[in-house]
Structures are given as structure tokens and as C-alpha cells.
Length: 167
Image 1: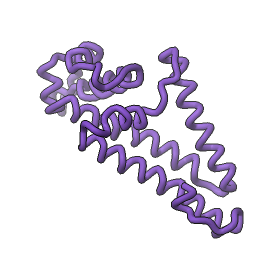
Image 2: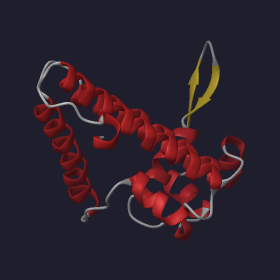
Image 3: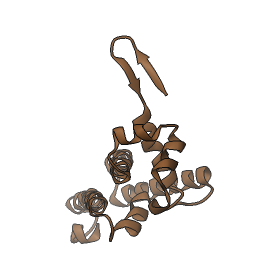
């Protein structure tokens, strides 16, 4: 559970294990069906440690969302950058999405869909903080695609179009 660093004192990876356990559970089941005790058990962390790192299950889910977006955003940026045509970049984004789902199928035995979409569907009317964070991510995703469409229009690859609406 803990490692020791002679110069720094005791360190713990409990927070990260909680985030990973919650992410794994959320990829398989709805948020409302997962309790703090189950997350702690899956992470191998005491319940008291959970509340040391997160004041609530909502706070943990927000951390899961942020970590997931951090990784996904990096992958999206990589897929959307470069000198490829708009179509090639969008195909790269679609391939990336298919890879996520293929990995999910191999790991969970089913296609679990998009973490963000699943949480938005389940919690949009119930949890303002989660809804707002997800909306910000969705807007950032649109921004990324919009920029690539604008670049394609500027390069003459596609006719002038409302890039925001197309994204």
C-alpha cells in the first residue's frame, strides 16, 4: 500500500488506485450502482483513506473525468495535428475512438461506450458539477475539431463552411 522514500518520507499511491478503480467500475456499470465501499475494495484502500483524498464520490468522479480527458485530449491532439488532410485527420480520430472501444471489448468483454457520454446521460439532470465539467470537455472537443476544419478551409481542402457547426 505504501512505499518509503528516505528523503521524502512516506508516500502512497492510494489516490491513484482509487481513481483507477473508479474508472474501471464506471466503464462497466452506472455511477448510481457503485458505492464508495466497492471503490475502496477494488482499490485495496481503506474507506478512511478515500475521504482523506476525496470529500465525496462526486469529487472522485470529477477526478476520473479529468484524468480520462487528460489522456484522451493528448491522443486527440496527436490525431488532429500534422499536415494530413482534414479527412485523414478525422479518420485518425475515428480510428482512435474505435481503438478505445476495441480495448474496452477485450478488457471488459463488452463495448462500454464513451465514459463522458455515459455519465452525461446518467447524471445530466442530477449533478450540476459533473454536468458542467462534461460540458466543458464536450466544448473543448468541438474546439479541437473546429480548428482542424478551419485549417482545411484556409488550405483550400474544403469549401468555406461554418466550422463550428460542422465540428
